[in-house]
Length: 162
Image 1: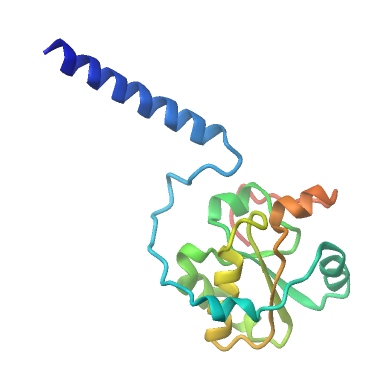
Image 2: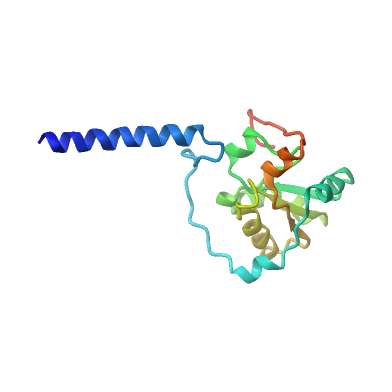
């Protein structure tokens, strides 16, 4: 009986520590957003999507030539995003697309981004947008971390989404 109690205490302590570590990490898992299994994106659909570097993205934004789309979840977007970006989280892409449809098909180039080069959500979202008929789509693989590493400003909307 005592062994079972010790195992239970270790399991509970491990769970509490894991929650604490997750909360302290910059890229911890969102525990408030319902996870939705994403349909697999075929690799050949993502290899032909053009990418932009930081300097090119800044030039495009200055010329108001692009619509910038953040593929991260709502909580991450609200915590900080590239100024002017619109939220279109991969985990609720259908409903967010419906809200932004007119802007997405307005003829401007759409540039997607997420966290950093290791995050493929922006690429998956870009491939999906192409499938939905959005004409000109690119990916900024540097993500929000690349933007911040380039000493660029971050916008915060803690009160609500744009």
